[in-house]
Length: 217
Image 1 (cartoon, one colour):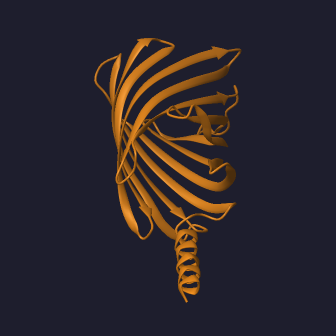
Image 2 (cartoon, rainbow, N blue to C red):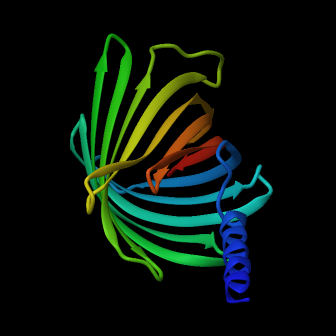
């Protein structure tokens, strides 16, 4: 009987875990709203809020707030700090995470092409879990083409995530999309993102359709 009880308990545990993890290839919707406030020619304050829906975009499971400060060291170099407060659903309840970060952004233009190299060092303080540091590097490329009065412009990007405690690649985000200038100070971005995450030695993917709105003040 003890063996039977243990087997039943294990089955229930596995089912509960599966219910709150995403299937490989899950379709998700991410929506981001950003505001940027110019202090002077070199300094600006950034705010961001993001919402995510998983399980074929049927389950709201993630929400974050982000506040930061960026300073232009050079026309091609920005540095900054930020802190992010995250609420993510795990095992039927929302867990809280605080994530301070340092940024270094390099920008280069050549023959009309624009390249951006964003480097981020962040430390993850996750509720009921061990905290650890992580390095993120995102490369974005924009070609010298625009269409219509909305200045539609395609882009492609790739971002890697490296957990510093284990020095291993744990995640990759490959994305492409298009940006549009809705008004003088308002821009929109629609994109597709393929997120690949390594857990317990196994890689799994998410397919994300995203929309981002940014307002400059």
